[in-house]
Length: 186
Ligand code: IMP
Ligand code: MG
Image (tube, rainbow, N blue to C red):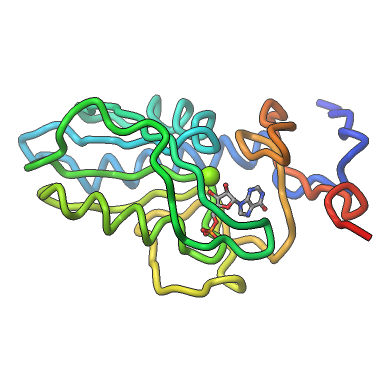
């Protein structure tokens, strides 16, 4: 089907079809990994960026799950996230003794996820792993290694399918590269 590209985008990086195909694969891999543990998988969705990805992913996981949400905001700018993360909304329930799967939209420097994992590990989960839709390995500054990765992408600022720029574009069904003129000063 012909998709009109949003005028603020340079190009489409990942089409809706490609994303859905990958989400299906990730769901199957997660199902295989956690099958037969005898307890539900505790999925933690990181708001807001991962909300759309997680909504699709959860429907592809075919084992019992519990779902909880955490909203965070990282200090710093787009160019360098400081890694100091403020929890805006914490989990509703303890995760002690559960296998935890953190669902994130994107790993850039890795600072946000690193901080988050360290915080969650202190709550004594039985295990903890990460599923991230997008990974920008070129930008990594701290050593984090997600167990489930959708796509490795080049160092470009992307929006859509949950990812925003200044709270916009989250509702695009595909992922595209934002025109540089829209976010670069000067
Ligand atoms: P990190 O701490 O540098 O890994 O940054 C991760 C966070 O930065 C993500 O959760 C996103 O909110 C944001 N981010 C990084 N790259 C992009 C991008 O290309 N588009 C939209 N948000 C991004
Ligand atoms: Mg985010």
